[in-house]
Image (cartoon, rainbow, N blue to C red; front, side, top):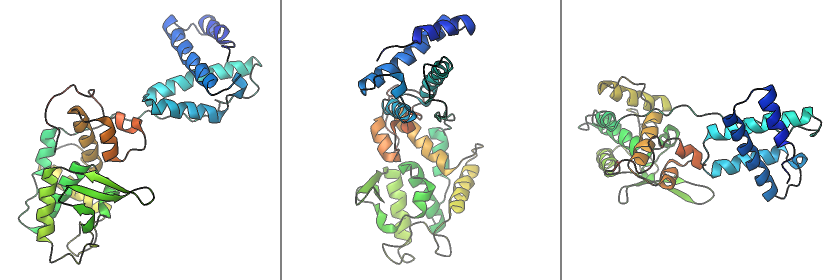
Length: 288
C-alpha cells in the first residue's frame, strides 16, 4: 500500500498547525505502522480500511502489549489523518470518525505488604466468626478472586490438599485458582470449626450467623471493618486486596502470564496495568 498523502498531511500540520518536529515524527511513525499493518492484511488502498479493520488493528496492538494510552494516541493520529483525507476528497468515508477509543485506565491503587499483613492479622480466629473473617480475607488476597466469585463458593470448591479454588471455566473446563499457605491454614481452621454447621459439600462456604450466604455488602463491610481496626486510613475494598495481590506478585518477579491466569484477565493489557515498577526489579520471595 502506498503512503498516499502522508507527506502532504505532515506538511499541512507543520505549516498550518505549527506542529513540532518531534510531533510530526510521531505522526509519521503511527501512520506508517497502520499502512504496513493494512498491507500485511492484503488491503490495497486507504479506502479499504474500514472501521472494522481499525478495530482489528487496535485489538492486535492490545495483544502485542501496547498500553491503552499508546493505542489511544495512535488512533487519534489516524482520526486526524482520515478527517483531512476526507476534506481533501481523497476518502469518501471516514472509517475512523465514530470509532470508540480505548479509555485510559485509572492509576492503580495498592496497599503495602505491611498494610495487608495488618488487615489479615486483625480477626481473632478463636470463634467461628473471627475464623470466617480471617479465612475470607486471606482468600480474597491470597487468590485474587472477585467478591462476586467468593459469594457463590461452596465447600467443595476448596481443595485444601493442593491449595486451590476450583472455579467453573469455559465450556466443561474448570479454572484452577491457587492460593498460599496462609489462606490454606485459615480455611482449614474455619472449615474444621464449621463442620457441624455445614450441611455438605454443596453448602455455601462463607455464611452469616443465620446460615445464609454472605451478601456483597456484607463482604465489603467485613473488609472495611478489619481495615479500620488495623488503622488503615485508605478506602479499602475487596477490589483493592485483589489489585494489591497483582502488584505484589509482579513486583516480586512473578510471570505476567501466570498472574493473568490467576486473576482471570481476558487480555494482557488488563494485567500489564499492575506492573508498576517493572518485572524483576525487586528480589525476594513471592507473597504467599
